[in-house]
Image (cartoon, rainbow, N blue to C red):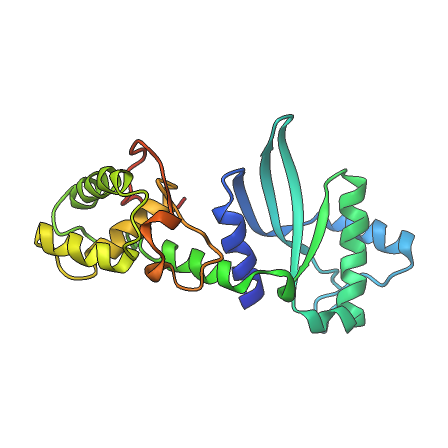
Length: 225
């Protein structure tokens, strides 16, 4: 993905009402050609050929609403692409394409994506078990998540910075330094510990700034959302 696409992906993945994200979703080529002819726009072709390009939308997401599932199409662009004629013509084809399918289509420029929020989401997400990573012992992270979640619920009005609390957590449980912060981020990913994503430095935020759920829910060490 481009940097702006990845940032938009992170914000979409974080939303609990988004149940599915399809990246670079291909559009029906016959339909995009028909749309292009109707609009009087030259359909894009693969370079050096007469073969029409299979156009794609950056993201086709499934959103859960009170009325049921809704598909939403999104394109992510840098601000300077707003002045690129070819880019705008392709977007016009896509706009009409999704309008005919009764699917909302949104264009998101990189300046519209909140940098601090995205940075915090990436920081939280990075705590999850990586592919091929093995816990020091089976079930350790789940056990530590349980312990920290229950303890934090009792400290919900505490002004202690998160980093200081996590350092103390490491010491009390004989853990390698930094483990507590990773566990806290796992709890944030699971929405057991709910952060203010607009905070400049989550580690420096007081415990009282986090909303703590009263019960532990899913396995915190699991990958993905």
